[in-house]
Length: 268
Ligand code: ATR
Image (tube, rainbow, N blue to C red; front, side, top):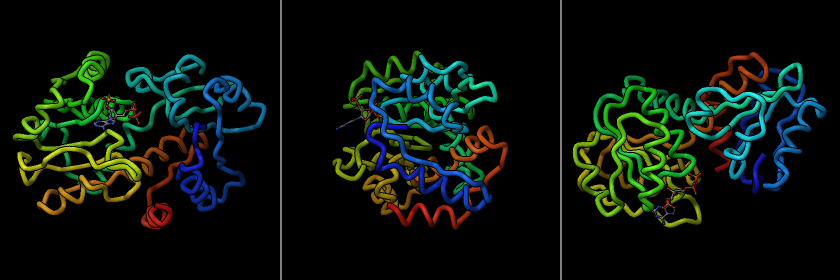
């Protein structure tokens, strides 16, 4: 469920998995107006849905609607996945943080969050899941940079952990000595300008990643590639969050195979 939703790659992703696992069913994009989320979620049991994913702008609003919220969703303040129980109760969780971590580990299995300072750019919905993920994975220093400083302060307070808020104008300094850089803003997404960030102060061995996955290689990742930094693209986060979703909807463990990745990459 989203508004808008037709751009979502989730139908292609879950349709692939339904076919692969021989399940008779469908994953459909549901364009739900913001004021109608509660009615839409409450209709899921009657429509025999196993659950749904939520995207912009519904992730936060769902917190007030579902019957149970797990620890991750509560800490992040947003629900990305809803599961319908046998009794029709709705449980909300957030799988974005897991998807991000697994997406990094798929490319760099030895990656550790405590390897050095982590710079996170942005303090919107995506950033909340990323900062939560880094804290949960044992990060020792997170430098949070956002154009609007107040938003970063609120995020740092809400999530807790070793987070230092850095002014937008000092974002270059934040890169000095960093082990990892993560863009969580919408900058670099198709239709938006590139992220306004000069990578010169960033160590050449720092891992650079972006949660934007359209285009697959954002200008930030291209720039990082050119100077020899290791990079992780945004698509892994989307692909890997499907694993806990399938576990809670169907009790099935799915994998992110090269075929699945290629199928979704072909749609980008
Ligand atoms: P999402 O839920 O997808 O993260 P969001 O909540 O609208 O979306 O957050 C978008 C992020 O991109 C924010 O961190 C935003 O910064 P502000 O909090 O200052 O708005 C950031 N962002 C958007 N446009 C930007 C720009 N032109 N330059 C820098 N950051 C920008």
